[in-house]
Image (cartoon, rainbow, N blue to C red; front, side, top):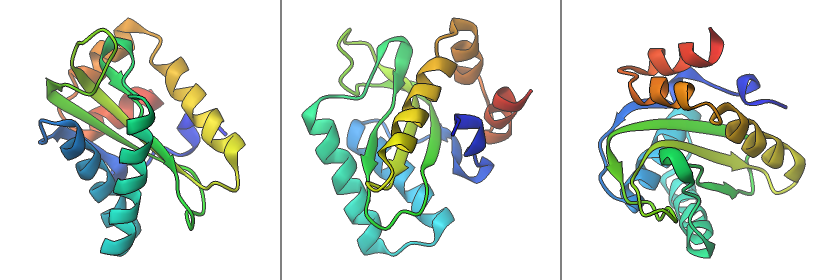
Length: 150
């Protein structure tokens, strides 16, 4: 499974409005919850799982990217939520720089290989500095979506 197989235009938000780590996580999970029609209780469970994972070590990487992720019981297939922030957010990157490109990955604990494949696909897609600049300068979710498919 590759990243392009699961990108959903309705799971992209540009720009994100939150200015802190927990706010970004809540905003991305809320977009997922709204699109998938899940309950508030399940949404809160997902937020909690993602925040627990972040406490183990930040998922912020170099070049302003973060890939918060969690394995959630009851999720049928892996999903990715993409968010672009206009202002860099302190997300815990080792270099101390802010993060502005976010990929929330939610997967079933029953299929760990899908989870790993998607994390790998994101890392590969984000290895291009030009691609990252284009993502960062995207004005709409359509711009982001088209970058992956053009």
